[in-house]
Length: 201
Image (tube, rainbow, N blue to C red):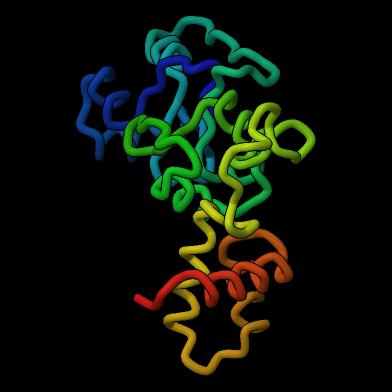
């Protein structure tokens, strides 16, 4: 997490600030640096650090603490977003591509989303008003043709059906649940609906 959208920095720019080649910095300086300055996304392939903390370390001055607690301006990566939404990271990336989730922004090649946007999507999924019903004033508007209309998982289910050959539908649903999150029963419904409403291809 990048707390409150604070400036971040990667190791290449840290090495540049230190005035040494990146390879030299990683070999000679990085081990001690990493012990003192926590990575913002420890499991990411791209290691990012709080810029103020990195500069303080390089200057030999006291390191400022990071803000504590959750804040709407926090930036979450795909793993943290997936945890908040109850899905897996690949589903988060698919949601962003398909428009079910905002595109977010990129910080040093790491895709991140504001906590406020993720919580808004979690608390108000598309097509649902408060309490899961239709929003007030929309009773006379067009109704969904089926429960999963507009759900990006429907396209995933259709693609899986096209590629499934003779795989039993319940096995396919189990596989999709493991890959993208959600229950096997939900994916069975999505597969059924995809078979009814989406043409192959």
